[in-house]
Structures are given as C-alpha cells and as structure tokens.
Image (cartoon, rainbow, N blue to C red):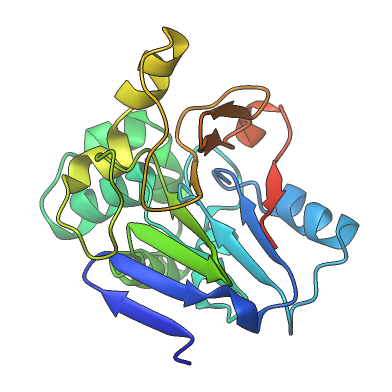
Length: 223
C-alpha cells in the first residue's frame, strides 16, 4: 500500500505504518513545551508520527525551530493562517502589517544570518497541505487548521480554502447548538480557536489550548 498520497491541498496518510500517531494543537513558537511533551509520552522518532493542526509560528519565542519541524520525517503539518500570512507577506506582496500585528514581528528582528533559513522554511511551508486524512483500518480522521467548510468530507473535494484556514463559523454556531455530525470521516480535528480546554462538538474536536498564552499544549493520541 502507498503510505502517502497527495492530491492538490489534500494529503492522505496510511496510519497503519506507524506505532502511535498524535495530533498537536497550535504551537506558535512554543518549541520547548512540545519537546517536553514528546518526552513525557515517550515519543518514538522512528516509529511514531506527530501531526500539527498548523500555526507553527508567531507570538512565541522559537519560531524557526518550530518551522524546521516540517523538515523532519516524523512530523506532518497542515498550513495554518499564520503560515499563510507570512507566505503572503514575503512572497506574494501581501500585507506585512497584518502579519506583524498578529505576532509575525519576530521576523523583523532576525539578523541576516537567521533570516535566510527562516525565508527558506516559510517558502517550503507554502507546499504544506491544508487537509490531512489519516486512515487506520476502518477508521478515518481528518485534520485541518480551522474548519472543513462542507458538511460532507471527500478527499480531493474542491472547497473554499480561505475558510479552511480562517473560518470560525462552525465552532461559534455550535455554541448555540447549531450544527451536527459531519460525514465522510469518523473524527475531524481542528485548531485555530484557542481555549483553555479542548472542545468537542459532535465529531469535531478543537485542540488549540492556547499554549502560547500559558494554557498548556494539547496532544491528542489518535492511534
């Protein structure tokens, strides 16, 4: 069986090849808390997989180290809105003030030697998928940064990619008990909307526990 399949902004992973699989919430430069957490769970860098819901950078103090995780064989990530703001500002004449206002000002403080690898990694981050599907036997789990903007999931389906990395409508509606199960996968895992505790609405799990705000880093074991 092929272990990974890429289709546009989607990545499909055969989860059966790994011993354990964890999904981690928004890092925002919190590299040391991540390393501490991996040590606590006895993460095996040869046989386990860690998937990030995106937002590796901004607000925290070790952004380059968090970005460099995308080069590691044991790590996969979807692209978050903070990566997208950086990519737009640096490579597509986007609004750098928007990025800096939202925590990207760390980049302006880099010296010339630090800026080179940071740029290279952010350029590489432009190739990150926006949706990761993990298949384990008869179980299917979908990871995206903010939302999957359709009630019926399908690998490779055309959706609004702006909403995938920015939309909070689904989680806000759930607060008013508006919504329901999404079809096409057993569980959907998102980040983006920080809260001190994880929140599950139907088969949608939100795991950004605001590590950069001091609330701890959540890691969800899915295998």
